[in-house]
Amino acid sequence: MAAVTLLETKDLSRSFGGLHAVSNVDFALGEGEVRAIIGPNGAGKTTFVNLLSGRLRPSSGTVTFEGSDISGLPAFERVRRGIAYTFQITSIYPNLPTLENVMIAAQGGGHKDAGASIAERAGQALASVGLQDRAGETAGEMAYGHQRLLEVAMGLALDPTLLILDEPTQGLSDSEIEDFCGLVKEIANKATVLLIEHNMPVVMQLADRITVLNFGEILAEGTPEDIRADRQVQAAYLGS
Ligand SMILES: Nc1ncnc2c1ncn2[C@@H]1O[C@H](COP(=O)(O)OP(=O)(O)OP(=O)(O)O)[C@@H](O)[C@H]1O
Ligand SMILES: [Mg+2]
Image 1: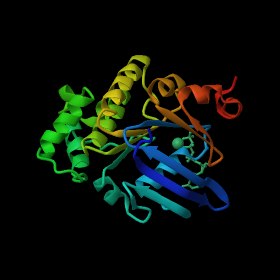
Image 2: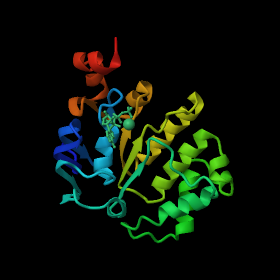
Image 3: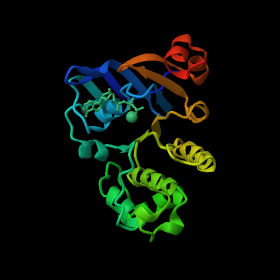
């Protein structure tokens, strides 16, 4: 049973000077999947998702989302179409209350006919990550783990079709990571998730499929079992 393709890249490349950060990547993401992207530091993971979200322009190649070519669209337009993303480096408004952070993010959405007001959607998103009791707290004064969750809430407030998370568990404690995994499973009931993650237990637990990037290219792709057993992946990334 082939899933409907939600997002696709063809021959997607991005260079920085002479460095091929992302190189001729053909990638397809099925609707409803949880896909993990793994690979060594500098493999091009963040660059790749920046090309999907529109933060970066490709040097060549295309990105197709829900059947239309979005390669030339600015980031805010992609957000409006349902692509939400959180950054590898926390990017909240530290001086504003938590709820206001989410409300600002929620204003970027609008691809679905949302009956709820911005405040309602923001409140729901905050509750879904368990931060409802911290709505009035200054965002930058919360613990780091809570700031990361706030970022996820900011993405969820857009009611995204595709949620891209760049190393969301970095800096979280073990118990926070466990809660986070539960959260992603819930999100996955409603959205497609693309997760860049170094924590292999998290990847193995959450991902339906895994894409391994190495030197800007796809080294391997498959189920968690396939990837765990892959010799090349072991050599390049998993160690052994
Ligand atoms: N804006 C930029 N200018 C120049 N080089 C860049 C830029 N962004 C990324 N690079 C380079 O492109 C390569 C891929 O970087 P990228 O951040 O995409 O890797 P990554 O897989 O996300 O790594 P990490 O696991 O450390 O987050 C690296 O060699 C990096 O130094
Ligand atoms: Mg990165």
